[in-house]
Image (cartoon, rainbow, N blue to C red; front, side, top):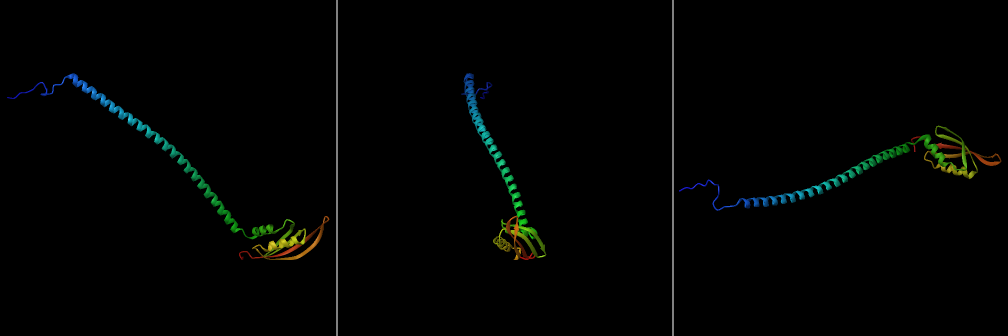
Length: 182
């Protein structure tokens, strides 16, 4: 014989609705606790990650600022280097009258002065005055050391009175090295 159970009750499992409700409440409380703990853990991890992100962002911003400063310094260094190259080129190309006048000015002692300077091709005539003959000699030696001068010759030296002070008037003939021939 076949029996059909219309009560939807399984044989051997007779549970009361109170027990079932209690188990449901306990399981719900456990699930709420587990999800609450998980939520709290994830929230603290999110805060830690946010703090790390903020500190890395600050570090990145500082780094960008330092990179900008380094780029500015590098640009400034390139500008200074370009200016130094231009100065070196100007010094190398310094020739002719500028170089010659510079050599004359550097060779002229403090106790001597020039009154006239004239050039014809590779010859230079200098007229000047000095306090004594050794000063004229010093000027000639220093002038002869110039790379632009081939030789220096004393053409005339005479003593003159100037407002009660005796000075030596002199005339020098300077033979110059031709431009481009050193």
